[in-house]
Length: 267
Image 1 (cartoon, rainbow, N blue to C red):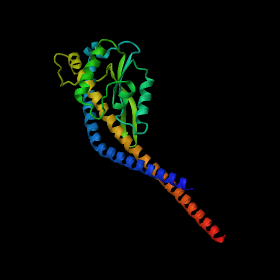
Image 2 (cartoon, helix red, strand yellow; image 1 turned 120 degrees about the vertical axis):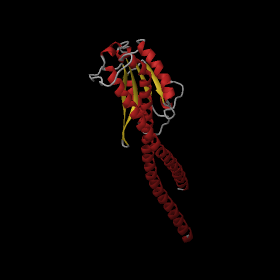
Image 3 (cartoon, rainbow, N blue to C red; image 1 turned 60 degrees about the horizontal axis):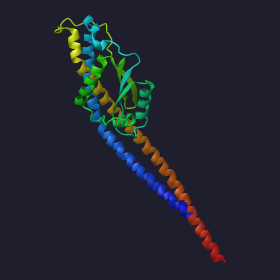
């Protein structure tokens, strides 16, 4: 019985250590949520402004001849996969990887340590991914797309819906789709809409990548906070169960000792 009690004490100590760790990680995630949400909202506003500008330009007839509105090699897909920098975030990373692999892409460009590990690339952290990093990547992608290497290019990231809901999704950024919007009468493009469109495309793609990275990071810290909350709750319930079992085992050992003493004194 003594061995059982010792084993239970060790298990309680081990689970208690895990509980402290999950609480600490949950607090770190909570502290990051506010800053990540502010950065996400700012990048969303910028991305929406870019969408509006490019949508207006692509509605012009002259832009129909742009290389950015033509499909390259049929079936050749390039994906930018934005995952997390760490684990312990529930199904955050695994759900995104399932979506990436379902596309059977020709080329996968990972952002985030988990994605880089999975696809064998140099480490690029989502948390510190910057506009400077994005513009380098954007220039490369624009050149490859114009040369006809890909049919389409997309960004796979996790979209923030609410604190309770974050969904992986694909946003196709190239080729551009022709819109039916009419150009605003007070906007004059020099020298013409097509030239302006092709000039801003690198900034447009970079802005979309940064916005997706900021949104993905926000989703990661929110998912980790809830995962740690759940893990902490489960650890607490496990400790309660182990303590009850420990008390029963201890009481049983005491009862056995008393019985042996009484039996010995009777002889």
